[in-house]
Structures are given as structure tokens and as C-alpha cells.
Image (cartoon, rainbow, N blue to C red; front, side, top):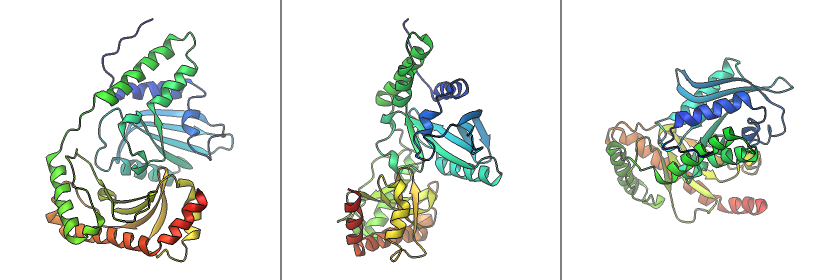
Length: 318
């Protein structure tokens, strides 16, 4: 049988996911195996909500699961084909999950992005717990697609979505966002040129993570200011499961103003800073912006003072 699909929208992938969670006893394992603590657990899907809305906005999918030990887990799933994240969208997912914990709706929650690999070249910078690629979904259906037109149709749908991500997305510039970034770049060059922030290109709406490239920063580290989260992060790639080791190794040099946390697949050494509003000009919040930039410089200088400790730590992980 031949399938011809002209276009794929996110809601169509939403329904594909919802149907599989609701009808397949093994589909959830594709998501759970992303987490060391859950990959061998026997979870059962109890509820599937599509386009669930509350005071924090909308979840594309919410999947409620329980295991034999009555542990309750909620997967908060954001599905992207090509659209950009809305301002604070992932932050709202986190607030929603924390609210569910307080309301005793679950014992744990995980924020998962479902997207084609082409959607981003820097998933580690996103504040998510895991990413399941469309390519993973396609392969899952292929494994069970023997003589199944249903599975083959879903493979065709995912292949079209993957193609769209590779060839169909064009950045839509937001002039206000682009101007914000340019003005911020000028301020960085005035306040802390050592941070070596590249001159920004055109930016879409909601762009809020700026990367700095100061001299002598180790290759495993990224220095990031996350405007709308109020975070300055020294990010350690692929170290999400090493936050305890990092805390122990750095216990003598960590101050009460520096936090060590997990962020997606990475660990971050974090300072809280004022939140910047992308809908306002840099000039109207220049004192806040200067404070943020000074904190970026401060955490970079702190790194330089303790560079040998980082070297030693990374050598042990090699």
C-alpha cells in the first residue's frame, strides 16, 4: 500500500503519540528507558491527556503512569516539528509539574521534548529531563511493522515530519527580539568584553539563552545567561548523573549563592540573577541587565580561580 502525505502538523503527531500510549502496553518504555531509575520499572499507563490546559498554559500531552510499588509518575510532553518555543514555555512546564507534586497528583514528573533531531543542535541547553526523537519513534514502529499497514502509515507520517524539520523550517525574525539581543551585546562589550559574546544574528521570538566564549573556558563547559529564567549557568555537558559528585568535589569552594543542579542531560553550576523581560527594551532594564552580566563575569572568574579542580574532575571521568 502506498501513502502520500503532503504536510504534517504537530497536532497530528500529538494524536499519534496519544493513541500509542493508550493502546500499546510497551510504548511507554521508549520514554521510560531515558531514565536510569525507571528503565527497568514495570509502569502501566492510567491516563492520557492531550492538549491539557491549566493556569500555566498547555501541555501537548500528559501521561499518568503507576508501577507495581504504586509509584505515580507523570510525563509532561512537549511536541515540536518546527515551531519555536514560546517565551517561558518550558519554565511553565516545570511550574506545572511542581504544582502536581504539591497537589499530590504524582510522586514524580518528567518533562520530555519529542522532536526531530534536526529541530535543534543543542538539546542539552534546554531545561528538559529527556528528549525522544521522531527518529526513535520511527524505529519503534519499524520494529513492529511486519505486515502492519497501520504501523507503516505511522512510519510514513513520521518520515514526512522529519523531512519537514530538515527542509521546511525557516527562521522567522522577531525585530523586537533581534534588537534586544543587539543592545544586550553592546552592553556586554561595555561591561565585560572578556566574556566574548558573538554578535547576534537575527533572532526569532522567545530566544532567551545567550552563550559566551571567554578565553580558557574548558571544552566541556558552556557559559550561559538564560534571560527569562533568571539563571547564569556554568554548564557541564553530559553530567546530569554526576551532580552529587560535583557537590562533594566542590564543597569547599561553593558559596551559598551558587547552586549545583541538573538541567536536562547536563549539570549546571548556577547563580540566580534578575529576570529580563524580552518584551521590554534593554535600556528600560539596564541596571538589571548590568547586574546579570557582572554575575556572568563573576562565575567565569570563579571558574578561572578553580580551573585545576575542573581539570582534575574531568580527568577522572575520562
